[in-house]
Image 1 (cartoon, rainbow, N blue to C red):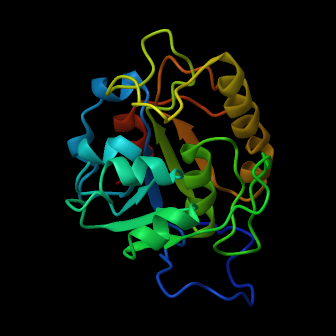
Image 2 (cartoon, one colour; image 1 turned 90 degrees about the horizontal axis):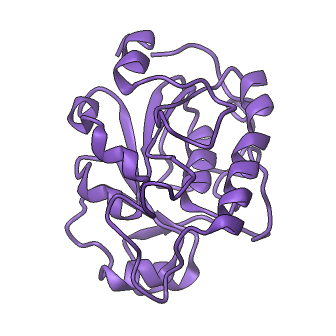
Image 3 (cartoon, rainbow, N blue to C red; image 1 turned 180 degrees about the vertical axis):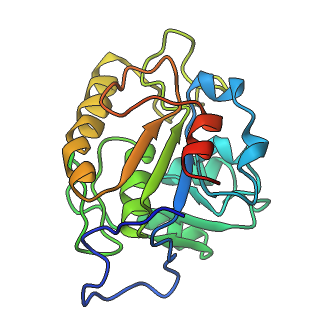
Length: 222
């Protein structure tokens, strides 16, 4: 377990009844970049909290939480009935259709900054991975691994191939937004003693230190 805390911990805030308390603990966020297939994800089980992004729950079915921002994705997957952990989305339609999905809010879809003082309200960043990072920090995590956050399409769009229409897939424009949003978090998280490591060795995201999953586990004594 890491020491330190985020600036939202200890505040007089109203927490949703499903809220996760990960204060001072570590979390791995498993994204959809092709590099994720090169990682032995089984070593995460029972050693670190895990958030799966969209289809990546199939790689880590033991994840604590599945996050997907789009109602269409949840609908295509019929609410992912086989996933037994916490399901979270920012999409009101998804949460209305599948009552077991808990809702967070994005009030400004163009926001590229983290929101820390309003539990259950998050920044957009243009992608589910950024939104999951915002949630992990709100949960109080102080060590965060980003796995499969390649932020380029040199090796393909996702480890699972392209999303079916009408879901969007990465392109040059949205990748630039994603990189910019993540890079804007670096100084803030460092000032809060939140350690973020990028476990995607060939990632366009360069502002977080890069480590293998094994190196991060050793550093954090997990």
